[in-house]
Length: 501
Image (cartoon, rainbow, N blue to C red; front, side, top):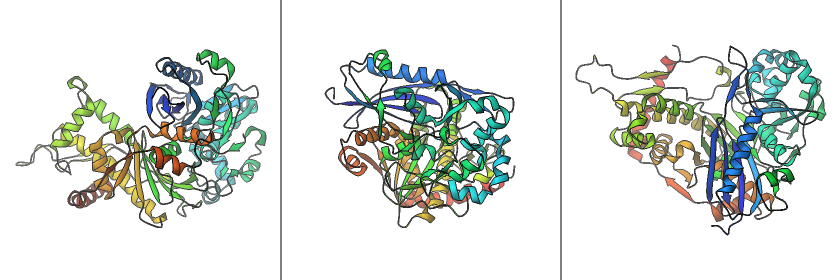
């Protein structure tokens, strides 16, 4: 392994800065991960921002730690990915004016400016994204209204992954996957939308050049070579992509009619298609895949990983050992349906028009007053949380099949996929075989594949995946899957009532 060439992969997700060292054989050798802080800027909690210096310091610390612990080394390239809706504004000297995470909703105060110029349908047919308050366009207009001095200082608008590349090389580019989440991108024409830019009289010079993911954009800056104690004369920087697209490549979902389930803080469910199909109901998003001439239709089950982590922290006793092992033991004790225990913590069918509604988190179970019934224990609640997450994924999985021309091949990766028990429950609830890469940290693998393509080590994604990736297969147990059909129907019927609380 030490003789392999190595690639540094940087992933700034919804909660963590992560740096991975991956060999050119797609072996994940080392990982550094640290949580970062998101700052609330107002009492209502809508406006949030990054501490950009803190994130950059964590990226540099991650690289230093990885390099220090993995010598000898030859780094042949550095690439990255980032949470997709996050936006950074640079001034004309290249300094950060603003960095906002995907949870920054300050655009809610300026969405009316967009609605005055475009109907929901008009804007969706250009960008294939809504609601307006979530994206770069609304945030940009907020600065124009509320902080005009900063707005006039803007020299360049970057998405988070673009900014990582800029900090490494000093050069600013964007790519089709990243800028597709800005609501300033024409998804059918694959270019900045002149119509939107002209309508709001925005300076076209603030929008960076769009290039393909996997393109060499420059080299690691000389001062960083020295700071990282790298003895090489040059290290190429390869344009990365949005984190969901990196996950999809890293799990193998690259062909038309593949469905990729990215199990993170939220769970995007993406169908790969051959053309930019725009949802006529203005709900599911359409975006570019990393793979040339492939697009994605995206549904999102919402806060899956967030709900699971909350449950573990709130209910599972860490003092008794490894939490994941405890839950694994729980799952072995409890049958499907969790003893008629149902959980509603957010995962559900994507509905963008319902984004701002406040829903209740609810557990439904047999109360102690029911004589003769076995009362639920912690293990019942644990299984019901996992089943509730899987039911939310199922709703989106089924909805995407209206756009599929054949039975999809299903892939999954990400945090919760590290549990084999979870993967088996998901396969049975979806009633389909699921292919899961042995390396579940698929974002690192996806950015590494981009790097290998950029360096011309391989000619296409398909060949890399065929030659280097291995999968664990989770097949359906027909009897359990059939049982889950009835359990899901019960879950759904109760959910219809819960939604009105």
